[in-house]
Length: 370
Image (cartoon, rainbow, N blue to C red; front, top):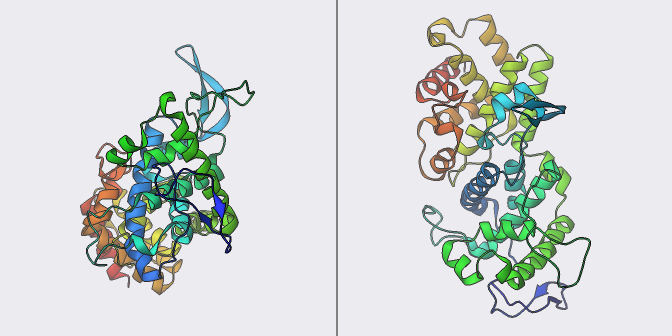
């Protein structure tokens, strides 16, 4: 962390300041290699997943799939929602708006620092990213969220300007995200979240706005957010729906399973999976989990199975088998990510598609079709 004095630019145009304040961030980061990103991204993804799910659960961010109009429920007007999307993607763990996937992509492109590497690349469990990096992750999540749902934030307006202002009171939403990524000791040092600490909150907010501008200037944000594996997977699912391979219900089930396999690869050594592998793995689980006796009723010679296989390249099917195998041997960060939400909740509407037995039969069918 660096000081709270006003930012100044050095001869190279980089931000610099003295180090003494709990509410300022060092902008001068050193790029990491692709192999180093494999170590750091799981930690970043875990942090982003946790904070995102907490914000949604506490109704600070609204992730409903509205379709216009309103209805009356016990005398209260409530928005009408898209039933299929709501049924299958209402859990924040499914990342229905791709905000988490987008934030992870931005973190990979902009938010990581060489000094964040743990002492040994093979033992990252229990390692906490430095505060400066976690604040940058907050900026990544903020930008990804605003790209998808910029008008759906509901933070309380608590902070007034000293002089009368039409913009007051403020939410300082961006600063709250940074505060959320701090650990307990850092929050105590920072001074807490309240009007009595508005000076530090405003300083953190101003610093994070500068970081947000830096991200927007340094990274092609639109293309980065639109090329995440999860977004591209949605495109593949749409193609399968257009061809009649998937019904609308099946397409939404497959989409709801995709983040499960996205999390599986955050193990510190695997590359991020391609969209074809994500969709094929989810498709196999959907087929096997649709009926308790599916493993007895479906064989590699079935027309349905052959049609599914024909939609994917051999390399995509091979990568999907690795994802399914990873889903059966969860440990470390992937296990922690998936324990946060619906994928570990037996009450979730699509839990049958990600339970161990379904994964086992889906992997067996995928291997028989290889």
